[in-house]
Image (tube, rainbow, N blue to C red; front, side, top):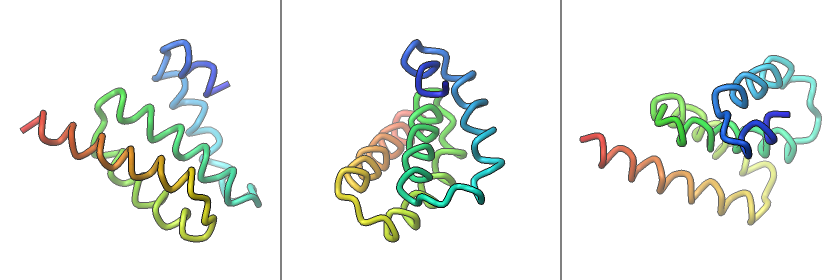
Length: 92
């Protein structure tokens, strides 16, 4: 549901769905799945220019990506790092 809300441009609602998933994060056994939903949530934070939350979440994603070792997901992390850095430059 969060992905659909994100696709249709309702990023606030998407974040609410992702936060619900976040509350049961400990029950998700697949590290890859946990990283994917965190990356979706990170994309929403960046789109809404919530840089502080994005910076905290990207640290979690980096730590989780070490355990997952998926090159595509690692590439997404690098992309989002660049977007955060770019947003910080625009804010200053």
